[in-house]
Length: 150
Image (cartoon, rainbow, N blue to C red; front, top):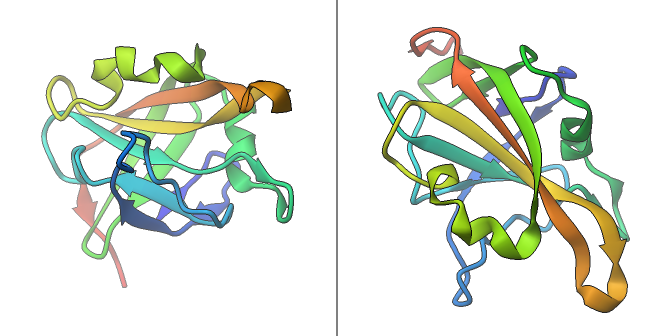
């Protein structure tokens, strides 16, 4: 479960990459995907990457749309069956959708501990395949993971 800065919780499920190397984000805008290749809650280093769609033609605007308005210091909570950890947002930046793979630190299970949240961002150009950018929100832990209460 990830609780966004606006207080909205979203279930998170493990996802992989497609055969084309693209993250297989859940189709339901009310659900996020944790990339299996990244770090897990409780790991002492590396990026935990969680992604969700910003919107859907059928489902409307999704909770991850709120990430387009975050500010440094806003809090995000990540919770697994046994652990929870709070993170403070350090940055929001837009990267061209087709350049995401050129930012290996976002996906790396090495380096400082961080939570990376990703969703689509404008402009939207249907003729060029949809959203042209990705919003990348990086946050760092505010404390060590603690036992999650049932």
